[in-house]
Amino acid sequence: MGMAAICLAAGLAPAGPAGDLAAPPPPREPIRNRAGDILEQTRILKFDGAEFSVEHLGGIARVPYGIMPEFYRRKYFFDPERAEEAEIARREMVELAQRKALLEVQRGILERRMRYEMENGRAKSSVPSAPPSGVAGASASTRFTSRELNDPTLPMRFEVAVRQNEAANLQDLGGPPFQLQLLIIGDTHVLFRTSTANMRATKVAIAHGMESSGQNLAPIFQNSGCTVYWVDTLRRPADGGILLVEYAVGSPLRPGSRSSAGGQ
Image 1 (cartoon, helix red, strand yellow):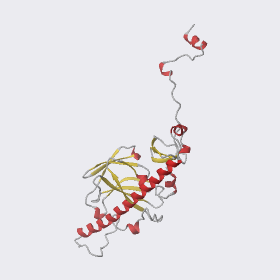
Image 2: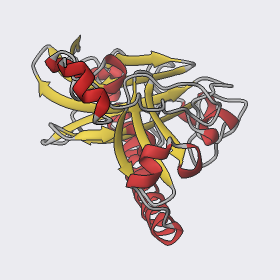
Image 3: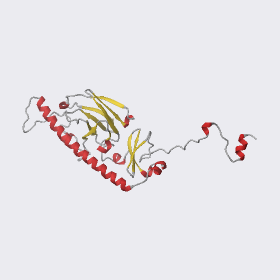
Image 4: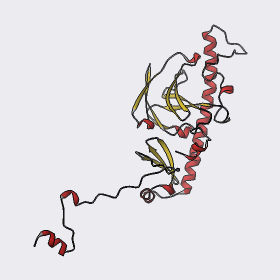
């Protein structure tokens, strides 16, 4: 009696090649965003008890527990109290970052005015003269709106500080939904990684000593009406740098927009 016949008589399936002994696991259900789109190359960053922060090919998405695949709903447990605590902590962090950024902007405007006057040989007076319109932030009160006012008829600008070698989730600071890690700050270039580029290192040229003419901004991200600039400034913290986030009117990534509120 052959081996196959013996196996069948015993109620066993005959063994095939060695690679067939262990059946492959069933394919895992893909992760989708709120709109039902499949997210590619996903990685779970954190779970706050009600929503997952999912890094994917296009950025970072917040996915509710109820629409996650069953595999993750079995692995993680729904906890609304924990989610509420995480949301309160996130709001407090955003508010603190906004207050710090507002102070940085105010300091930056004053610094730019002083440097403009010094470079043009004028002494500081009680009524400072207005810098030219090309100065970054010089006419922010009329040309741009702040996050706090968020005038929908004006483009928005604000600054955020990031630390070197620490991955910063810009969405938590009011920026677009992606992570940025500042690697090296050189004399002529800045090196960083972003989740939108699969965390590959990117080098951007910067110009020193041109802040008074508004040429100190180097774009490092542009998408859907949002631009993030590296700011070359004397106000740069010793352990990191300053980014300027700019949203066009109607940008879907802008804080308060319907698309931004709904996640990726």
